[in-house]
Each structure stands twice: as structure tokens, then as C-alpha cells.
Length: 168
Image (cartoon, rainbow, N blue to C red; front, side, top):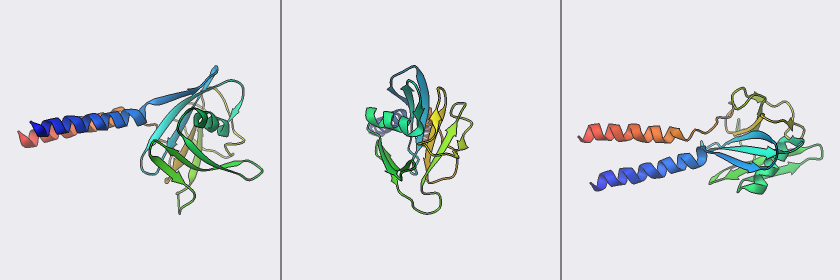
């Protein structure tokens, strides 16, 4: 009986962790909305729906999110534009350049979080429009992955079924 309670508690914790990192976080105000996805090297990911009026740059999206959440953005200004050097959010953090793909890669999409392209311009120069997405990925040269809250719940359900079969 105690074993079943432990599994239920562990499942709830996993589900809540997945939900917290998988739900879209609404920030800002205005009539336009753009998406922002950040993928950390440890697999952590977050997604923001950023509301704004008028024109906003990729750096502007980050500024709105940072002003309204616990997101920490490390930037360096080289005079010709700002360079993003690190992010920290909800216990996930990556900063600086390591080796290979260990650096923050900037991706954009004009049609939602599906048709990603590596940006050929910096976030300081990109003008983000309603419905577009910006993505940041550390540690791999692949497109951003939008976090899905149901993933952990499905894995937990499958593990419970497997445990039930092996202990029955």
C-alpha cells in the first residue's frame, strides 16, 4: 500500500513539473502576440506568449519577458547590437560559449512554432510581427522544441502500467 502511495505522489510531482515547464506563460500587454521558446541543454524548455503594441525586436521580446517573469537574460552590447550570452529560468541555466554547439543559437519562425529557420540577423535587428516566433537553443544545432505538458503524464502512466504488470 505504501508503495502505491509513493508512486502516486511521485507521479503527481512529475506531472506538475511537466505542466509547469510545458504550459505557455502569458506576458506583456497589447494587441499583438508573438511566441518565444527557450530550450536549455539539460532538456528544460519554456514557452512564452508575449503581447505588445507597435514594433518590437527579438531583444525587445526578451526584455518584456524578463520584466514580467523570473527569466534572467545575460546580454552583451558590442555597439552594433546586443548579443545574448545566457538564460536562466526555473532552475535551468546555460551561459557563455563552451565547445561545438554549446552557445545560444537564435531561430525564427514566421508561421508558428513549426517552420523554424536559423536567423541570419541578430535579435537586435529582427522586427517581430504578430504571430511570429523566436526560439533560443543551447547545446544542439537543431530547431527549438515546444514543451508539451502531456509528455511526462503519458510516461508516468506507462510506467505505472508496467509496474502493475510486473508486481501483480
